[in-house]
Structure formats: C-alpha cells, structure tokens
Image 1: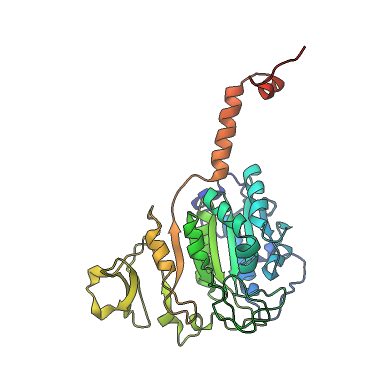
Image 2: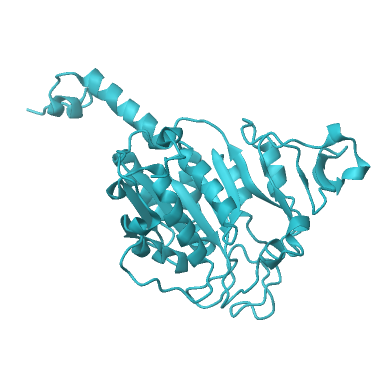
Length: 355
C-alpha cells in the first residue's frame, strides 16, 4: 500500500476489507503470459492498473475484474485477483449482479468500444443510469481488433476497413457523450500512453461511489495504428488536448493561447485567448448537478482531426449507489417482516384456499 495515499479517501470502498500489508505492483501480476500484439496500448493500461491498485490497500481476493469479449477482455487473466471473462457485451450486467450481492468486493469492468457500445450498448447505459458501484474501463481504439479490423461504433465516418471498403456510412458514437446522456455520475477520458494522467483518473474513479466510466484512448498498432497520434505527438498534443481541471479556467495550447467560452448563441466553443476577457473563459465544474456543460465539452472534439479534444474528469457528482439503496431497502423489508412466517408472507392477502 502506498503510504502517501489514505485508503479512507476512497468512500466507494468503505465496505471492502482492507489489508495492513504493504503491496507492490508485482503482487497484482498473474503468472499468465501476456499475449497481446507487440506494441498494443493494452500493455500500458495493464501496467498502470497493476501499479495503481496497491494504493487502494485492498485484499486481492476482494477485487474482481469482469470482461466481455475482445482484445481488452483478456485483462482478467493477467491480474492476480479474481476475474470473470464473460459474454460479449454483457460484462456490465454480470458485474451488476456481483456488486449488488457482494458489497465486500471492488468490482471493475474491462471492455472495448465494440464490446461496450455495439452488442453491449443496452447493458452499459442501464448500469450507468442505475449508478451501480462499478468502475468501467472502456478501451477505445476505434476498430474491432480481435476479429481483425472491421469498423466499430467509434470509427469515424468514411473509415476504410475490411467491412467498409468504400468507407463507413455510420456516424460514430462519442462514449463520453453517451455516458453523460445516460446520467452517469462519473465520466472521464484519458490516454493509454500518459501514465500520470491515466493513474490520476483511475484514482478519482476508484474513490467515486457508483458507476465510474473511464474512456481510455488506446492504440491498435495492427489494425488502426496511430488512431490517436495527434493527441500523443509532442509537436501537436499541447495544441490538441484540453486538460480539464475542476475549478480551473479551461485554457490550453502550447502557450495557453486558446480558451473555451460560451458564445452569444449559448453554444460552447474554442477561441483565441486574445479575443476575450479573462472573465469570459469558462471554468470547469465537474461537480455541477446539471451535466449540460460536461456534455457540451464532450462535443468539442472533431472526430476526424481530433482538434480540441478534452481529457480528464468531465463529471463527478454524488448520488447514492444502486447497491447501497438495495441493501437499505432489503434491511427495511426485513425489519417490516419481523418474525412473520415466510410462507405466510409469500402467500400475502391475494391467495385463498379452495375446499
């Protein structure tokens, strides 16, 4: 356990047993050979998660990773925790049952853009709206990697792939916008290659009670190489990335010369800092009850050029988690039942005996 981190700062884990032992990243590495394509962004995410988990101070047997189907879904094999490699798109549903029935577990979902947003879209949005105590890591490489390079729900319009040789006709999903539209209480975005930023977002997600969705821009160097390169290249990233910090003016650019403002038409946009007064620059409020500003920020980025792409925590608001409310409801029902016979309770007042 990292002595610089106080586990009590993670309220979402207040019912999960802690350990007094000092833990290291290597203790969260399983004995399985990691088998992703060389150069895949999944390696960086795996290393970041393994390096971060000791901060939580949890027993490894009280941590569970649930995955669906896809390249990212091999993740549980490489974690020295409990894990479930489940069904295509159904990881949120399986994880929901686990989280509600076992409050002593820290439950994480690992999924991809195809797994989560295509066949699994319905399960994802309902987990988000219910605010189940889950941490969902959505690896977004804008392609189907496991099945060898078909376009996915996040592929940009016009994308040339094996399944769209003349270009995709679909308008792509924006995972952050989808999550905010589903009333998710915690929504964030980060990059596989930015270890410090990824870890800070994981830390915030772990502390949150309820569903935390973290979209991770992840590179598939075999079927969609350099999909996010403008956001990673040292020559372009500062002018492309908007790093959101709660309470701070939304300013970016290599010289801090670009800012986000609300125009006369009410829409949010990017302008040169020299064109506006300091008071006109929007301040990011991740804790606002209304997700309107967070949603507007999620719509800034251009899906083709990636210009003006925000990363960081878009929304982090408090709302009782579904599993906590379910436990309270169950306790109330048990108190109301008292010593009554279960058979009588089940029969209720709507049954009768025919003689």
